Picture 1 (cartoon, rainbow, N blue to C red):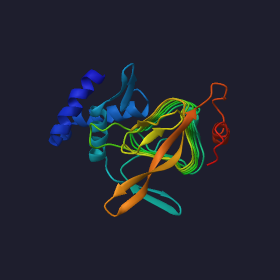
Picture 2 (cartoon, one colour):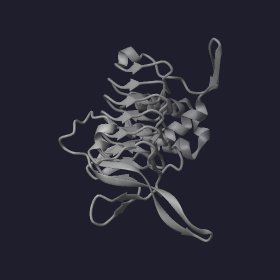
Picture 3 (tube, rainbow, N blue to C red):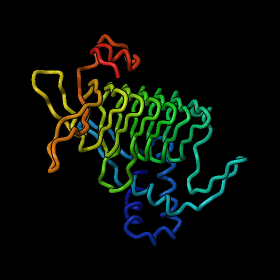
Picture 4 (cartoon, one colour):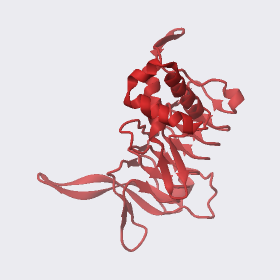
Length: 272
């Protein structure tokens, strides 16, 4: 159906008046339903890396425009919003602990555990992942299989600009407590981020495990073990410390993939 939906979505995005025709508004709803079921994704993994499907993001933005505002009440609480919430967790094979919230249009695969947390529309959370307490999975973020998003992790969302890539956390990664990953940063397979690591597109990610530093931006290489760091930068007013992330080594093959963060860091005599 993609061949049918994509040109309609792109046309409606260029001319919103088309949404008054049910043919176009139905196409928007069909795309969101497919995203909700995991049949379409905002970003798709390929042999040459991740490909962003901009037209799917367009459909999400159009969906906001056609959805009516509604009031929900659950005494003593009241909510007023456009977006429905996911339901039928038992049928999906998802454990959702009160007060886990996931919007309709986010794909949550079987055996995912949602602690009290928030997952926004367009996100993709693959099998066996743990979204821990007060973690946030932003719009369109792509979370792989067997990932652990620890307590208070902030995974940024992105809808605009359309060409911007979403945050991607690949299979088996461990994201430590209170980490922030935004602006389309990619954390590759089985990487470990220690607590409080902050990653943006401008954050220096410096591999200090060898004889010479190697610098990355926007990407954490697979199986890297990363901790917060800082480096000295000159400003007109003087020299100050600027945050960075330090790769201190590689996750060892002998380490169980379900290891705790403390175990992974203990291999490098690091405590964070």
